[in-house]
Length: 337
Image (cartoon, rainbow, N blue to C red; front, side, top):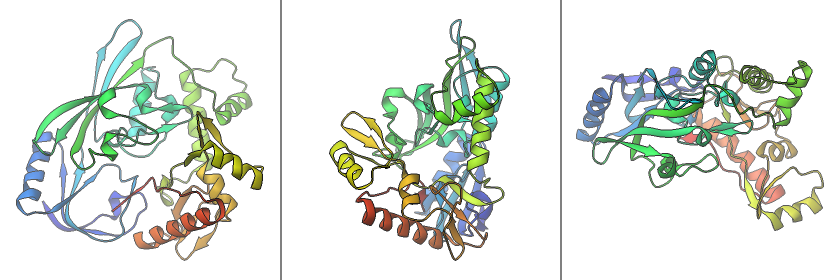
């Protein structure tokens, strides 16, 4: 247990903030001990994984717990599937690459997403036509009310678009310890419907792609569009893509004929990046903070000197301008601390 520890190394925005107490845990028993320490002193707790989905807007007057649970195990599941369980502290992209090295299919479209395995079910991470729920079996969690471990299956997690029970009524009540995925060992389902993937494969002259080809395409696309947090502080997509009623979208089409949208029943998902770009934010910088010049959805710590409050205020200006122009309320995807 350490006191007055800088959290700058533990958040991908690279903002400076200090935790009153800090500890790094490697086993569920250590985690329980840290929680008991926090409870006995009536301290707030902050769980840190890869630090890729948080914005620290000030010092944290409580206990920051870095989850460093490690390990991967496998269990055969029929002729064409395998169950792979990864501990919460495993780096997500490294885990995806581990599965690809063994030719396990199902996660290739999710390559190069920042963060750790333990945070992936919280917001049902997804990209290029794949979501966690497509391959999810269960996650093992610590119930903070009972201090006992329990399993959450697919139904109990109640996954939605960038959503789950862990962001709703279960928020703050559970800590994910491990996640189990059901992956294919052969006869893989290749998903190349996303236009950018098709383009990458076509440029490479690949007509019958493997899971490895898809992963390479995804990695190339992400590297070409998104900044590396190791070089430029960011947390990936800062906002969710809003979903609006179909009649509202049709009204907007009259005023903005080129508006993009993806129908889903009586609703339409509108790309937040497009909305932000139309409001003139793409590449715009105010002080230490900017919208990325290649992807307006990504807010960056442009100088490396930005505070969390500066980044938060910058995001508020974007929300206000999109609301004023389109009547659409953007929602932050990043957790504000």
